[in-house]
Length: 312
Image (cartoon, rainbow, N blue to C red):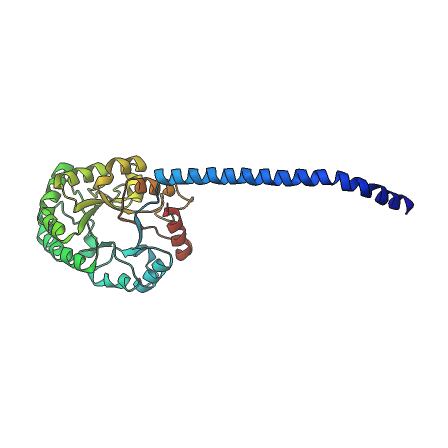
């Protein structure tokens, strides 16, 4: 007890002297640390401003296609899309275009009403005999799309069936020729979809970007573009980011999907979707990127994750 009392008494004066210096050093260190933190924060802010100036937030909008989410009614899907921050529900028939509007959304890509919807992809513009019913169908659809605020109407090349690529392209151009002035007049874009002929759509003619770009150059109108389906073109040719950078002026719309399988676009598949989205954004694209994957897990959670991956 005496030792403790002695140490307490003897150390009281010393602590008064010795304790002052550490307190002053600690305060000085805190001031210096605060200054360093402020410098680091300012430096990081400057880097962020510079990075954002070089890579501004992408201006494109997000959509979702209806068919992979068939377990939901169109109203349910539209409600979910709005809650998840999407801008559109698409690949809808004309009599469905009004439904997303009730939820503050649009239909970014509409169908034209045709006699045999199940044959849309195989009986396309590359056959003269199809023009007799395709041209009137699109003559009706384009003004309807404009009135409904639908910016794009999808179209297809059709199957080769022994036809050469050059002949097919020429026939497509011939069939689209009377429609392009109508599209220009109404401010609606016709988008021909690029599909793979290796796995999902054997013999489809518009199966390579180069073929579609050649057709777009021949038509030479801002109201005819390609629907670049990332899933399909990864299967056919890969080199997705370079292709987008080289040909973005001919692309009017994008679809997503994981490869292989056309399922979620997360790390379970081979494509780096955030990098692809950055490339699309850097091209200046202001249209729509639509989710077109078949969910294998909870559809809402998968769609929410896709939205997160595509917000760059």
